Image 1 (cartoon, rainbow, N blue to C red):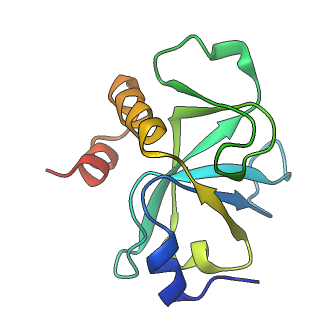
Image 2: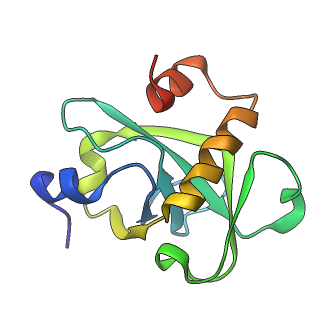
Length: 133
């Protein structure tokens, strides 16, 4: 069931974990976990989020955050790649393409913010929107 706009505003804040169904990447069509990096705001045309990976190959890099199994509803050990950020239409987040899974704890969200500061390939306007001016 898709989240309505009113519910989206209550649930979808920074650190919300969503399971993205039918989010097509060039190399895959499987669902992906994503973490919102800014709160849902129905007035903005887009929202920024980062994607998780289960590949530990780069976990030693400063812009990766370990997410233990079961945290915020994520199954299996995952890593949030804070250099792999995307911008998608805001209203799409409340569609059937996305399912709310849970919320990262505040301590882990702080680690995400620190990792975002280490991610060097992010567009400047992403950082301005995430951290404010």
